[in-house]
Amino acid sequence: MTVRIKTDGLAKSYRIKHASKATRFSEQLMRFAKNPIAALRGTKETSEEFWAVRDVSFEITDGEVIGVIGRNGAGKSTLLKLLSRITDPTRGRIELNGRVASLLEVGTGFHPELTGRENIFLNGAILGMSRAEIRRKFDEIVDFAEIDRFLDTPVKRYSSGMYVRLAFAVAAHLEPEILIVDEVLAVGDAQFQKKCIGKMNSVAEGGRTVLFVSHQMGAVSQLCTRCLYMKSGELVADGETQEIIETYLSDGTGETRVLNRSRKDAGSTTPVWIKNLSTRNEASQPISSFAHDEKIVMEMDFESTAPVLPRGLAISICLQDTLNRRVFTDYRIVDRLIATDPYHIKIALPEGIIAPGNYSFIVSLHTFQSEVFDRLERVCEFSVVDNGTRMSMFRAGDTGCLLADCEWSLPESIVKKEAA
Image 1 (cartoon, helix red, strand yellow):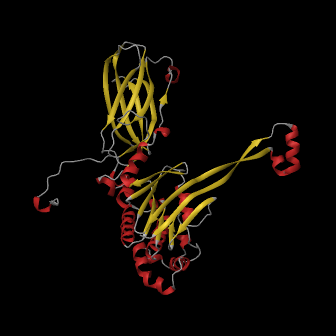
Image 2 (tube, helix red, strand yellow; image 1 turned 90 degrees about the horizontal axis):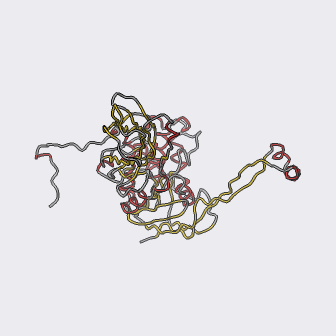
Image 3 (cartoon, one colour; image 1 turned 135 degrees about the vertical axis):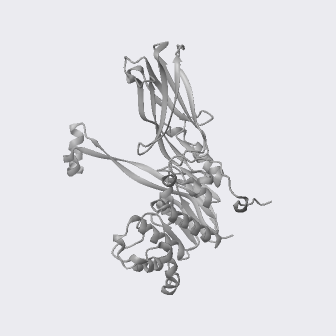
């Protein structure tokens, strides 16, 4: 097999500047002599070295579809810019065998004053293709992008979705040996994303190499056979897709939000208050990122100064999305409080019903007549990520927040038979 991409000790650093106030008079005089303008502003500049990518080494052969995953700031986009030769590495080597087409940001490689038609020919020329080759693929590109009505309009008037449709169509159809696609596909609608994934599959089946960065684990699981997991600029795992996705999803301990409160936070007169809150997995590890088919557990500690509450105590939770829309509410009634230590309770949300997206809780301690003792809003923020379940073809915006697993009764004549 031909090695299409090889990196050895690849690294990229940037110099980050900071400004701070000058304190001593002698410092100010020295700075005025060196840089009068900065001195008049009353600040001094310091800088630090930041490694966006550090010592990354891997090989990719022809026909492989590789996913690159990791949290924001992990170095994924910087890595793709290095491979696309948009920026130079600080150290290390990159070996590329074949033409590279990349789709990294909306509008990358397009001239805003030129029309869609002109930009197709411009991009083809940049890839080293002849005018005849571009003409041969021209109709396919336009059909795929679905922008034929606006083909002779300057692309500066395109919406971000139109930009992406045309840019992907150009990158995928002009027969590069290496196709590099960043998260930019998220700009497109669900139908177009499905088309893109299908096209990338056919590109790979044709023996070409695809490098795909995405936060949508369903798309990565569906498309890629191998994954690179990046964290803090380093390549921490490289292997089979499902295994790497599970490693990525379970590696959320450092980002979880555990809420710790004192009596004073809730108000000194309340007889009962919430002390601790956190979201955890089934192993009781505090995390804030869950797979779609993983059980989400909220753990809560609350304290009480009253052994008996005359009107009883209701403990309620409400799950809400990022637009503060309520997904569901659940509660339990407690008649008597007898413990001297904090009460510890666990609330497990069923796995597989919450659509991928970002969520938080409203948690309340109150009477059944709605007299509120303690209430917290937008706490324990967490995300649900599609890890390649049967719901991968849907997006949260298309399905709602809950994914029901209903009982279906279908005529035998239309039921797909399983292979023997």
